[in-house]
Image 1 (cartoon, helix red, strand yellow):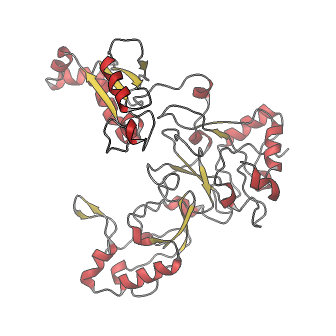
Image 2 (cartoon, helix red, strand yellow; image 1 turned 60 degrees about the horizontal axis):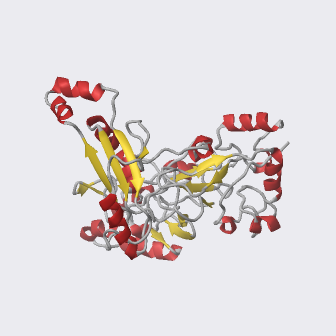
Image 3 (cartoon, one colour; image 1 turned 90 degrees about the horizontal axis):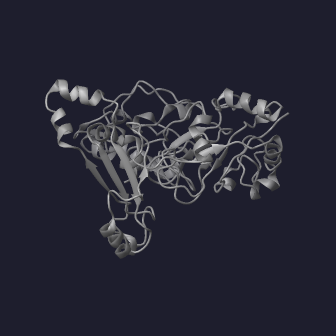
Length: 405
């Protein structure tokens, strides 16, 4: 449901329906969110949220699709279908069925959705919340986390990875492909299989002229991976065995780097608005599913160039009446909020109203304050419990501007 109503993968489908219909009604049957109580589900065996979508188009519009010229003219028309949304009351499915029986398409309880062709089939945010910028508006770069494509390249310990690699390279040639678990596209070998030679490597590692099937030596030394928000694993940093490694994350990887992972298409129904790690994150680092985006705080491995838009620092400097910079190894940042918003609305950011808030956050970055304050800063002491000990801020719900006059 979430993908269809608001996900980027269904943008063209939403556009297609808006272009070819006059009215679309969307009924959210799972206001409780993912994995609700069994008694609340319309289909007891389905844990995912479900919805009902009714798309209506008149006979004259259907006729307009007959013939290339008429069809093209119809699609070029700026008139798009009106999308109407409502949610069933939360509670037992008997109450939901009763609400469905009493529902009318012409009553006044429907909410209008945005009119843009690819916009979500959800009501637009209203009030001050709608004016807050999205998290990605603050950063120059964001991308997906690492998508290994096979489970054996990740393990809770490095030794297991070495043993798996040894078994693979020493296996009979006929068995290697099955042990490797190749990337398949349409039932055929994709871009990761034992015979594939790769002409590049991840940052900091040498390019290998061999395919994995021709290897006979040890694997690259395993490194730590931000597998999930509170689960650090190990991975073999070999580009030949990772389907989608996102090389840019490895370029900026260092002991000084901080990666934020968060949803951008919708706000989470519970838990922190985002999580952080000092390790390169997995694709599903934030929530174990539904992907998300990764935002490095620094644009370089040396942690000297902030990944924040320069215009943000300029604007904050003008607002606060004093320079806001990345001095002292701590980049300024927005304040991320996750209030009780309806499904499909992304987490948004706001900056501290004045410099004293930012200065307070800076003081909170000390060793003692770090344990109790939900603040995100980077750099500073490497002592356990200091700002660089990211395990202590896994439950952080906000990060604020740090002001350096």
